[in-house]
Length: 481
Image 1 (spheres, rainbow, N blue to C red):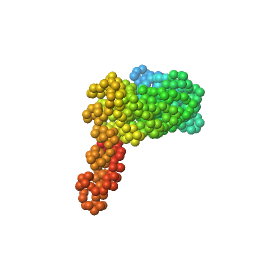
Image 2: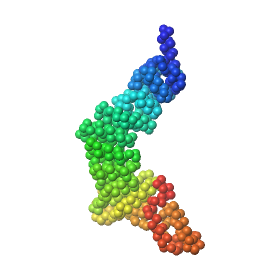
Image 3: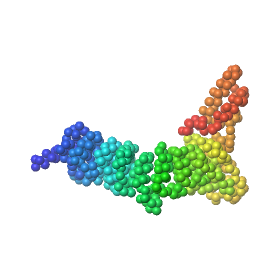
Image 4: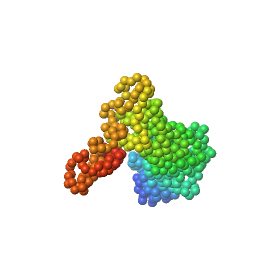
């Protein structure tokens, strides 16, 4: 009886220190202490829940706490609940303890990247379930949340760092196709090209496009890489496309083609050429979708690969559930005109930049003659016969729906003293400075005369050349509009 009481007191002392995060005291008590408390709570579980440091976690494992031990109960009831109450465990610490969790699962739930890194270093299994569920720890780390708690970037980085260490050392052996697919997904989401290449090699001969589940996952990963904001997106696509996996590059996901997803992503200049070179299809519909996203860089990247022709026989096209013009310029204007709520200054600037790309590529506003229109048209503000004998969309945009500047540029307007008023404030200020400097250097001494009255045709020519594109004089965030 005396020995059992001493054991209980010892257990309460060590677990109380661990759960309170008292590292120094816990390190003294751990050697020779009880490893497991009621409810399957190990000293390692307690150290992680108490946010103890790496030295304490290592000491708990050295003292015999199993890395893969699972809690038999949660903090909500049973022997574990009573034990936590007896030692005065804080409620905020108890909140991390769920039935079937490993120490790694607790660290992931708490977003404790340092603990995750140390547990993996000590030998924690990336591919074993961290809690009640079928998925491995790595899989849970690279979904949006683990048991409704957001997974932190630090936790993801800890997994990738440990896996990369093992890969570089030649010790990363994937036991089955499931583990290889988990690693591939984590590598794509995390933007880690070497780990992705390792996975692709391991999957050679084991993944088939005919296998529905495999095909769906691989397509998900390809679209994720295409739309990724990672600086490694292009390299990731090369690994996926040039490996032994097989993809149908004409397929669409959520109504978007691969080139469309890449164009609206964060790095279209890098990703679009890779996909196009691999065989991804670029036609007018793909271009129009990029135009609708108001991604100037994406549109430019697509047009650098190929320039789809406008079909003069058809004025409108259905993109998903929405009608739009087949002319890229009017497609963009139409997108802005029907936008609800009204477009912001930033969206107007994005449209202006996209418009500049289209004009530079040689596209011009289209006028159609004798073309059919759909029975339901977004702008039922004008009456027409079907087919329409003459259709110029500029005649039908609702008043005030588009900025005067945007319409001016779309119509091919250029700078002149008469149109100077339409340019952004930054351009006007620069022009004022340039012209005043020119006037003073010529000895005129005048500083406030109207633009049209200033001498120096060559100086005005410089101003005209500097005026285009108008979008260069506006901030990307819409400032200076």
